[in-house]
Image (spheres, rainbow, N blue to C red):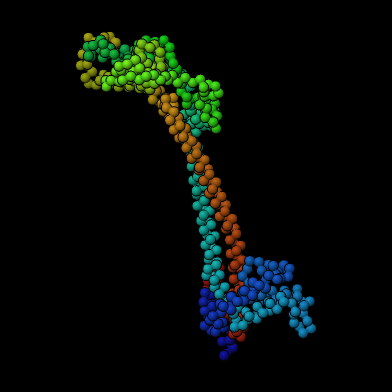
Length: 499
């Protein structure tokens, strides 16, 4: 072979390195069993090693290959120099074990096949996998940043909505149920204010009443009885509204769910029965002889059953007219009683609709004809202008707006329905918990981002170390192959150079 041919470089693609060695019979085709046996011997040998710092570094978490074994032998020659005899042999078992391992590696060049396989795996799988993991960590961090911003904005929005809702209800949002129940104390002042406003509608009610009387020619038709009652008598009991006379006495309706919940022991149910009182309860039950009962429900003996049920009993919420005692719903004021309050609202709506229709008629083209029809009408009807009716409409609309306001409706429902109290408290709690959930989700995302960042920090040194080891293997393999070809230059090319 000419001198020029001897200097020609040998180029080997990195991913075909092991195949190249096998094809040229530098290593046996079935080299794996021998390599596995050698690794078992290495596992046994590393259990008995001297306390040398470099040895600890070599053996720490690294796959030990042939070149590591050569370095270990060099270090052992120093640490085990005392065991060398006059013939140049070592009596140390450690030296014997590692010399055997190196000898097995060099037999049939098994070591060359093993390191070539290791280099191929590092280039094709290990380094790309580490980079893929780091890329996944970076992607996770980017997603976490987006979600962190989303949850932060959502938490602010939820907090604002919660505070706005609490402001709308008029509560602080600390002890929600108790604060909601405390709102009911505002109702008496509201009723007093509404009664005062209704008194200002006297001219409106008079105008409507006169208009109805004139148009249907009747003096017995009462247009807005509830408004008239409030203007004359004020916010009386429903009993007075129903019977047209004041009650002799009022049995106040006790709303148990408005009482302070803290007064009852949470761990024990208080039945209101204790000690000697339990023996003194009179259930008002007597045992008498029961006579024959006729089919029509009447009795024929002194001990007969009386099937008569008093429909005006206190439990029905209606008081007998002759009793003189306001009980149940009759004890509530007309603005506190849902039924009479609904009538109050309906009459306001009726007034508003009438005034709006009247304004449309007076502004229309037929207003002159209407004026001629109202020539014989009372003065109160003739003297009203469109501006007067618009002012009347504004008064009615202002009262309606107060009564139908969302917050006021909540107050009405709070007093009349214990279930509504629970439902409204649950709604407020849900709005508060939504903000807390967003904050908790944000913290979880931040923890996830932190974990992903930490994982990336751990993967980066592994990648750098693996690339460095792969580069060293490349040089060592190139050097050993070069020896087989009379020191011709050998270049392992391909993907390995892109690491």
